[in-house]
Image (cartoon, rainbow, N blue to C red; front, side):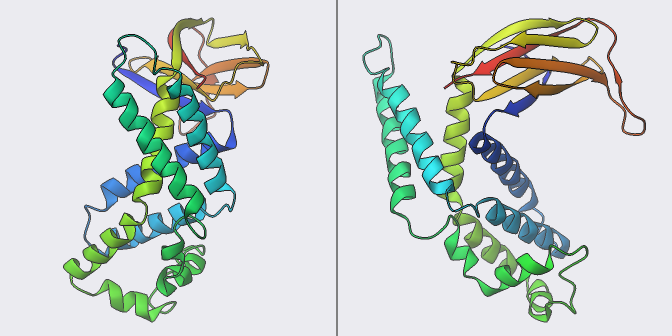
Length: 256
């Protein structure tokens, strides 16, 4: 078990990229929903609209369903593996199958019920403007924000429930992709590491793990045939410079 590290992830296809963005937004929502102030509610609404925007793509349901089917095929091969927890595997396969059927059979785009709420649809346009959503933009929004905490919180939580199954789908995909990985310790000579990749490998995600006591961060470049990682000394004021010492780190290849 690698401890005390900072993990940097680099997706290799659009679906995994979308899944990582969704994961981040859901994490932010978990934190923000605890803030019941008016400002907290405004921030929560902005997050909900960001999630809806990310779910906008009409082909996303099909791609997620296809990914669930792919994961089911991989897991089904484990059914005859000795020492496998068959009860756990059966439950996981059932869950993947149910989520896949929901994606295929559901009508409209993901989050369709929320798209039909007039306030959210109006806010989607106004919040794209810096400082948008002022009381002169949408008076009804200003009115709703002045309502008791209980009313606002109940509404927010009911809206978040609309994301439950898509979040479960997203979490399962990322969990399975991350778990199906091989991790190797590497050394970046003078802050640089490069290696050839097998183009036949179904590489989905690269994870770079750096000890948190090293003052360096990676910039990752990926292609079908190569991987290069360049480490930099962090600076938020000046242009970063390349790390000049040898650096030991871990590299995970997620290939499920």
